[in-house]
Amino acid sequence: MNIPFIDLKTQFTRLEPEIRKRLDAVLEHGRFIMGPEVAELEKALAAFVGTKHAVSCASGTEALLMPLMAWGIGPGDAVFTTPFTFIATAEVIALLGATPVFVDIDPATYNLDPAKLALAAAAVKAQDPTIYPLPQAALDNKLTPRAVIPVDLFGLPCDADALATIAAENDLLILEDAAQGFGGVYKGRKAGSLGTAGATSFFPAKPLGCFGDGGAVFTDDDTLAGLLESIRVHGKGSAKYDNVRVGLNARLDTMQAAVLLAKLPAFPAELDARDAVAARYAENLSGLPDLTLPTIPNGCRSAWAQYTLASPRRDAIIAALREEGIPSMIYYPKSLHEQTAFVGLGYAPQDFPASPAASANVFSLPMHPYLDAATQDRICAALAKAVR
Ligand SMILES: *Cc1c(COP(=O)(O)O)cnc(C)c1O
Image (tube, rainbow, N blue to C red; front, side, top):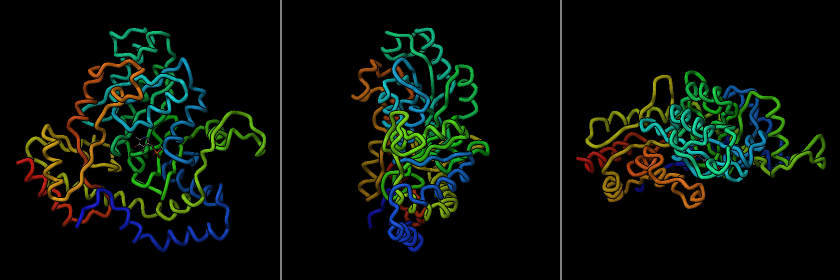
């Protein structure tokens, strides 16, 4: 039997009655846009994350875009982020005409390195690329450092305390990209609540997924929450056809809110199950040659969006796993500063050495809450055979 990389079918089977009941209710009341499930979900999400507000939206990408719009970020602004992430994290910066300024990762956690953020901010202010590599736009014009988008990569929360210190010193807003981190914990605080605002995604394969696209923004800031609610519905003012700013159509479908309401109660137990799967991997794979296991710093809990290993023999390992019918994925094969979409930034490949080194070595194994021990042991045995 083929092993799925992520098993959404088993989850559906377990939660089917509740999901169908919730979807039926929407079919009955027919309020497909901004129906009562949307507000109900937002309340439940805010309670889960521990923020004052949760503003749902149509995708994780829009959850990243909307706070930047609300903050008026645009041409002449520098927004710092990691080159080792999904394209959406940096795409939203470029979409608004602002300049993505990349900051390399900590090779142990794959998350943005706060010490390098301090250097990058200093380099932008001094227009001096000898302090830290800069994009061409930061040399042509003196950019204003406005925000940083740290990512909770593979489910591990970003280094929030260190980032907060450097952000405060440089007057930066923090937009936490918790698309993969939702469910994770940093020193008792939930992922999504670690910045000025946090963005998450409910894409089906994320830790908490719906049956299509969806996302949410978390914040304690009342003003920001109000702006987000306006931006997601075409910049609405007090009435529907009163448009006070340029916005988007970025609402979460009522159907998707219904699916998430059915899934959310099971989510804490699913996070425990993910922890158990990760622990079993660690137990079975530690000590194997040429294999680096995930690092979870003290005080952190990962949401285990991915279980990601690194090996200099990565490509041979992947091929050997495939022979045994075991799927694996590479997140991410190419750093963003090397992507065609960002050649205009004028970065050189060696500007951020840790990110391409990770791209060359990482691979992710099947990870989901319903991975049974026997299947996992099969995966581990195949991997052990491949590296010995
Ligand atoms: C998935 C993801 C996004 C985008 O979310 P969508 O819902 O697909 O738009 C953004 N950032 C990261 C790190 C992601 O993994």
